[in-house]
Structure formats: structure tokens, C-alpha cells
Image (cartoon, rainbow, N blue to C red; front, side):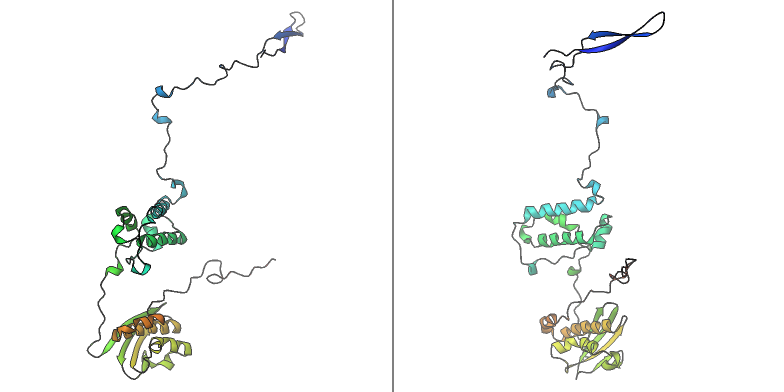
Length: 297
């Protein structure tokens, strides 16, 4: 391809009048170069590279979640997901026969990691741990046991052997029940069905019929209303919490006399301690979740 020619204007200054006289001059200006000359750099020989300069490098984070703000907890979560994908085909035991493990609470896990882990994210972690814990113990890989160890509590409450409750020399069974801020110490003895709450009758202690029925629900559900006397000492909370605390205490004391009643009491909902509490009020809210009424103007 022939190079293109452009006219370039030059200026000549007169020595007498010092006026500028333009002159037309043609110069050859090439707008295209040969193919070899257009290459920015010569070809790179990969076999004879110079040694790298450490000052030209940059630090690469070891963790891909370094810039997330929660690298340790995110890495642990991704590691559990990878372990689940790897070992999900191993044989498992039924959910009721899996080893009982006390996992750390979200507060304990936050203190361990030193990061503000969200409760919803930690709930997903617990779901994966419960699925991995169902793998049969005979084929449980050692690296999986090590990965699950950091989520277990330092003290396993299920490994503690509780002192068995017995009937004392006076024929009384003693148990403690709790509900919200209330606690009840319940003494159960064989009798004709009398009930005393803090030295008062049941009707005097609880004005609502619902609270009276709730306090004796364990005896009513098993048909033992006229076979045992109940003496309860309650403190803290309100009438509803105190009545339900007596329910749990009476059920535990009844199981000391008749352990075979535990399935019936569990079906009646008297065995498990109710952990629900009143939710705290939030700033900017009228109550725990209620927001102020919105007005346009």
C-alpha cells in the first residue's frame, strides 16, 4: 500500500519588513508502517524469562472470603458444605438413633469466632451439622470428626449422669419446674387430691380457671387427680408462669412415682420445659414488633 502524502504549511519571515510569508511545501508523511514495525514488543521467549522481582508482586489473601468482613465463619460454612457434598452418600442412622450432641449456641459461636455471625446463618450451619452427625459412627471419616469438633460445647450436658430422683423416707417426691421468670418447687405425696400453693388453696392462689387447670394438667391428663397430694412453693413471674411451672414440677415428681407414665405425660406436653419468653421491646417500636401508626401528614 502506497503511503499517503499530506501538504504541510511552512512560514518564512522577511528580513526587511519582518512579515511572515507562507510557503507551500510538500513532505512525505507515512500513515502506515510495515507489519513488523507495528508490534509493540518483540516476541516473548517463555523459556528464557528473567527472574521475578519480589517488589513487583502483591499479597494474595489465603481465604477467598477475606474481603467479606466475616472470613473465618464463612470459610467454616463453606468447608461444611464441601464435606456434606463429599460424604452425603455414606450410610446414615435414623434421626432418633443419632448420637446426642450439644452444639454451641450462636452467642458462644460469636465469641469463639470474634465475628458478628447472624442467627439465620448459624441455623443453616446447625442443620448441616445435624445431617453430618447422622452418618453411621463406624464409617465416620476422621477429618469430618475434626471439622465438627469446633461446633461442640466444651462440656457435654448429655454425658453428665444425673443423680436419680428417689422417694424420701416420708414418701414424698421432690421436683423443680420453671416457666418464664417463675420457678416452682413441687412435693408430691400419695393422698386424696389436696393441693396447696404457698400455703393457700388452689382457688385462692389462682383466680383464673385456666391457671387452675394448667397447674394440675399433669395429674388430670394421667387420671391421677384423686391419688396424690400436691404441695408447691412458687416465686417469681405472674400467675400464668407460676401455674405452668407447677405443671412441669408436678409431672417430674409424678414420674418418680410412676416412670411408666412418661409417654403419656410427653403426649400431654408436660415433660419438656417451655423456653419461650416475652420478646424485648425494640427502640422505635411501640412494643416488641408493633410499629407506630403511620400518618401521611
